[in-house]
Image 1 (cartoon, protein in one colour):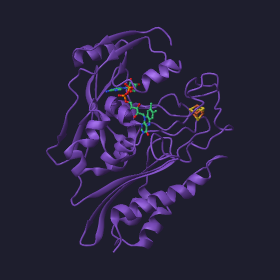
Image 2 (image 1 turned 180 degrees about the horizontal axis):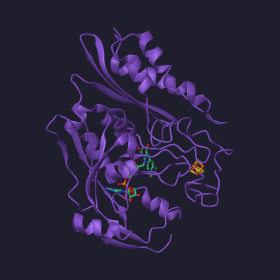
Image 3 (image 1 turned 180 degrees about the vertical axis):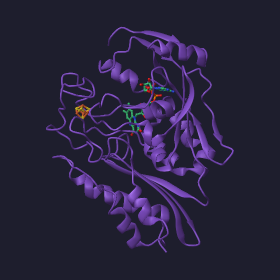
Image 4 (image 1 turned 45 degrees about the vertical axis):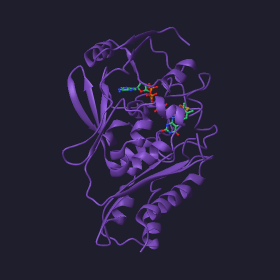
Length: 326
Ligand SMILES: Cc1cc2nc3c(=O)[nH]c(=O)nc-3n(C[C@H](O)[C@H](O)[C@H](O)COP(=O)(O)OP(=O)(O)OC[C@H]3O[C@@H](n4cnc5c(N)ncnc54)[C@H](O)[C@@H]3O)c2cc1C
Ligand code: SF4
């Protein structure tokens, strides 16, 4: 591990001051410390933000939900309002990591976590994300866990967060506070596809702090849920996953929000699937036909061709679980 200094911010102003000078925020520390141990990350100054007042979950005026950046994964998952309004968020969190990690880890840290690509975490391997211009060992290496959607010629790594898939499906926004004040960024624009700059992963500006994630109000009744397919039943990242929310009234699907995880360089929204569902009546054939569109544009690699069929089946199964069949 490289030497670093650690300061604890007593309030938001102190945190922003330290962030402006290049300090790196640390919340639960469950992923940043790992990366520092592996020398993938080498921050000179860490700014502990765990005392900041960003630990609230609240229902917004319009009936959406705002989750503070420092609310732990465990607290968010268990919160009665999260459970009742957006079970897809609770389920995505409960299927993440382990109970111990979920107690420490925060919502802000979760959406900021970096890829689990093994070459990224091995400092002896070529990796454009870790060291721009060095190459991508995964392209011709073992790429079973990698992306089939949204990849570029320089990086094919997936984004590993589960709850980010739920946020993408629900079209959440990220609230930011920086030296220039507050702003909000749609979740779809917050995590960046690799393009030619895979080292740039989020739309954060220097020194900006995530303060909250806000889920907009959606028409009720709303059924939602998260399905994660992985190599073992716990403590494992997704091969594929699906976040689904459906508003069905008088037997007709009025709104559909669908996104997939484990397959894209960012959580992958599925507008073609959503479009196929809206205005239709739930049926077995509808779920299958809509899910056929889930892998549109997929470009599988040598070891992950199976993800194309698996993704379609994951989406179909989760549509059936959430939407039922009449
Ligand atoms: C063994 C293991 C298994 C895991 N399995 C899963 C899984 O199945 N699914 C899943 O989704 N995740 C999984 N994770 C990842 C885990 O969810 C993350 O480690 C955790 O959410 C990170 O949160 P943290 O608060 O500890 O972040 P930290 O480690 O403190 O920070 C992570 C990053 O976020 C930045 N950051 C943190 N808070 C803010 C903020 N408010 N504003 C700006 N920047 C900020 C930090 O600067 C750092 O770059 C796993 C992790 C481990 C170690
Ligand atoms: S896929 Fe991306 S993160 Fe993995 S080695 Fe290639 S450039 Fe690095």
